[in-house]
Image (cartoon, rainbow, N blue to C red):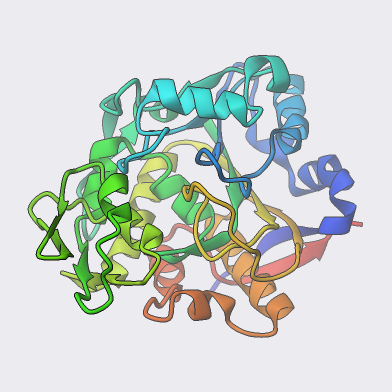
Length: 351
């Protein structure tokens, strides 16, 4: 493979107080220019979840952005599943409850795709799946993006890191529908106990109970997978109506659209590594002890490094164990082949 490996800097979790040094060493200041509008892409966590990156860790990032005379703001986009964060009002309320407020962080919080998720612009990418992608307006208007990601497992992609944070996380609601369109659940009637938990979580009215079991209207189903996560007996499972890797490839194409024409810096937290994402409104047990924090300008290299560190510290493939039917390397390989970054990296420790 041609070219030099990308640089990824690593800070051990027990030295996390040195986060400002990590940011400086990895060159955050180099990607910011005076008067930039800087979108600090966060995930504020679903109500009831505590795995998200905490507000205190954003302070050193904001400090650098302020010192560079930029205009930073914290941002995320609305969800397509039923929950507190599927509109900007509820989303901002949850963000505030979790400590993400102007008073506590020193920067505004903006829900990038507007009140109901329909504020966006289209970016031409000429991809395999999309010729154009629908990127949330406030992120589209930014000059630079700082992607602050929490590494963990993910129902559709195997793991969620920087690519997932940029792709799904920067898309307007219509874009999220486009990415999920290839996945739909199926019901094991022998396992279904008709508890109704999946019906309560579905934002699209796609589920009902008939004859003592859940039925799915695939015409209404968005493929978001939230019903699968809340199904305690495991009666709901993903059935791909297209090759499963296509969803990961769509994440990549949206991520590339989100950062097109912008300067990018990535920070990834490898703590509270749970089987599922921070959209889950409950606390899941960590699959591996807290590891550390990564920083890089290459979104592919930082995701590859996160995967390698997680598997090394776990002594096995915890991602495959959590989601055995998903080949999570698809997103990494597709992103590399598309020129989004490199899977080859040099890991540099910050002491």
